[in-house]
Length: 145
Image 1 (cartoon, one colour):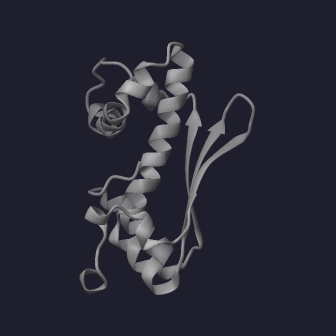
Image 2 (cartoon, one colour):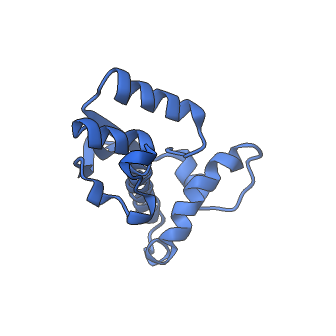
């Protein structure tokens, strides 16, 4: 999960991008994820609800599409994919990624889903360094980075 207030994630991201100068970041979900399954329902899981909330936001965003899928497994798998796509979008909204794109035209962001049942990786998206790929509301200008 790419949560803009998660200082653990942001510190690891900053170290990887600015110090190690990684050229590729992989956001990898997996079919069969219990968190995604839980987010499709309304059962309370205590503190875990705070984490599930982020997935539920993705569900809400795509509720019409997801609810139109009749078979539960297919709905579940589609939310896994949509969640990965949204986490990739959340990565490029960070000033860490945007600054690196401006300074060194890297890293690429890859969205994958791993199949626990077959060991295959479903490559959903590759986002190449391009400030134009970021919704204008979330773009930082060079002076603000």
